[in-house]
Amino acid sequence: MAATTARRVRIAATASAVLLGGSLLGASAAEAAVAAHPHKPYGVVTAKSGLNVRQYPSTDSSVKYVLPYRAERGLDCKVRAQVIHGNAYWYKLRNSQYWISARYVHNVGHVKLCKDRYPSPMTDTSKAQKAMG
Image (cartoon, rainbow, N blue to C red; front, side, top):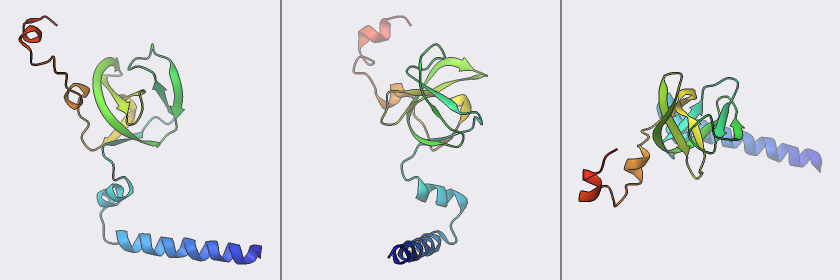
């Protein structure tokens, strides 16, 4: 019985590989990446030692967990914050309140600034236009 189950699993895996391979046959690497990640933008961790996920966009903020090298995560938006090795951007993770430094992420797709993704109704008021900072 276990041999029958193992055989069914091998057959299903082979069929899936053939179907997947056939659907991507002739596709460029970029098209294959889009097929694998339909939700853009996303980022790929480039730090070989892993990347700290922080509560706020700063190294003074607490570490919530660590993403391993080459981990892929959806990116919601970006802000300018603490500069990390020449890069001032931090990405807010999609479906999360946590942040990662853009210095150690290769992003795929356009990541909007958070102020553009979530505009404030206060921005266009005359009071805000006249205020400093």
